Amino acid sequence: MKNKSILHLDLDTFFVSVERLQHSELKNKPLIVGGMGDRGVVAACSYETRKFGVHSGMAMKVARQLCPQATVIKGNASTYTKYSKEVTEIIKSKVPSFEKASVDEFYADLSGMDKFFGINQFAHELRQTIIKESGLPISFGLSQNKVVSKIATGEAKPNAEIVIPHGNEKTFLAPLSVNKIPMVGNKTFQKLLNLGVREIKTIQEMPVQMLESVLGKAGRTIWKRANGLDNTPIIPYHERKSISTERTFGRDTIDMVRLHATLVAMAESLAYQLRRGNKLTSLISVKIRYSDYQTHSKQAKIAYTSADHILIPKVEMLFKQLYSRRLLIRLIGVKFSGLAGGNYQINLFDDSEEMLNLYNSLDKIRERFGEHSVMRAVTMGTKTIGRMGNPFNGEPPIVLAHRKQ
Image (tube, rainbow, N blue to C red):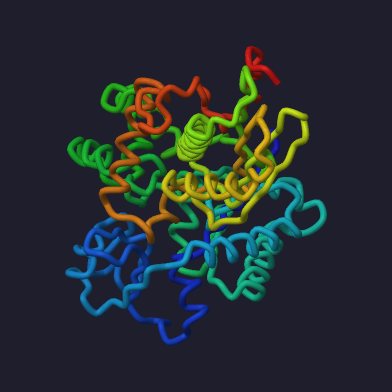
């Protein structure tokens, strides 16, 4: 099989860099972006704060104690959304196929481009173009697969690039700490340390069975990654543009309580699907079909999010603006589009630790006992809305044959 060339691009301390671009006085100073209250959470922090032990996801209260001289900013999701889209457009104009793994992280398959020009040179020029046109620092790793490229980007940071020639993957990985392997979190890291495994080189020298006996199925994946083996495909950015759900009522209705409950249940279900698929939405639309079959819809652009408490009020607002005819309603629908990869981090400016823990706990219950194991009181009694599968697993959506269309 011909060698592949996979590029991983990552905007350095993205939220921090955007703030510095807009406020030059913040350059080279310790900066923390996140929730401002006592219960706020750190969404991003500059390199200057890291030597004090500050990291994203920690309580703002703790971060302020560790680094009292840092400037703290609430952050603005819509500004970051704008810059994320700008960088996406630059990559789109230069690369035939790429994956947007999150708001600040991209993969591109450059295999076969060396027929036309050097891949390393192309990647270097792409990075320079992004820096010049967006004003943001960005790093890259280039190797024959996603995992090695991602680790290489981590080693290149801040604002630099590393190319791992074919065949050098194991040598490059060997001296690095095992927690550099994607999917080795704190718990796994601790287990490996207890085994006396500190460097990736040690895993490379172990039989795969040994790692499997300690870490179960994940052991095999970690062993493969330590050996520079990975064949995860690039998921093209345009693959899934939206997720939606709609409900046709058995009997046309203007029962506002029922309509409202159905809308909230839809928004809640779709938001959960986003979080499960590690996706964020930036465009919401609501659709109404009246009993005379006239169909109207309204949409609103929003900052990237996957949070119920931001999405539900927007859906309610759109419905209010839309429903003006006072006619019986036959169908209502909700759609989230303008999707990008990315976790809950972008909502950390608005939230407290409690809100974050609440979403995590509720989603864990749903994962285990099904989507309808936890529902808002207002949605009780609505017929099943939502799907059991993950809409982002690459499989085609299930056709809901039993629903009236």
